[in-house]
Length: 238
Figure: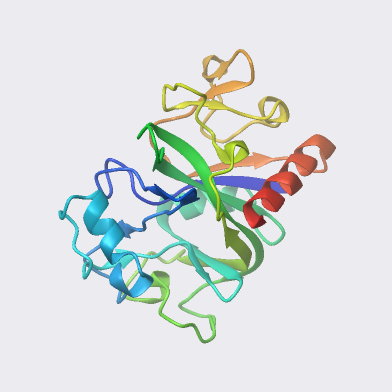
């Protein structure tokens, strides 16, 4: 079994700022786009929020890349190109779990930090060029326009967190941003793109790479890792 830590939503490069936490609820803002989308922030009920957090730089009627998409109790997530090749090479598939994380600003202090905000347990993998995705309330961006030949949509049960639970926070208290507190089993399991020993710090801390979208841990049947994952999914669903 594999766990994929998947970086998504606003950051300083895409969107220009962190996603907000509003009344204790993390709100992951999908990144802005000019193509392969028919969905605006207003369509998702995020128009006022995106204009506020970007100070008007991104308008409510701007197109966004809604991916992952959470709808009807399921999650659909698209990937292609080098990132999809990495997932394929790592053997990611049915039964594996994506944990989506992003950059958020603390509601009271404004402190930027990484936190997990949602998940997808893969039940199906679809190539939009050859497979049917079924009816959706709105088009998934990876079904629109031209994509790489390995364009893939992962689909399955999923949910987003309705509260900023402390256990879903990754960045260590007080920062720096890329210093995470991670479960003890992760060092032994390993995490793709984090092979350098110097990244694994004392006290179960990890210096996460600055770039990259999908980080994969192959946990196999490791009981502590599976228990941690079950607790994490339960917390997201609370």
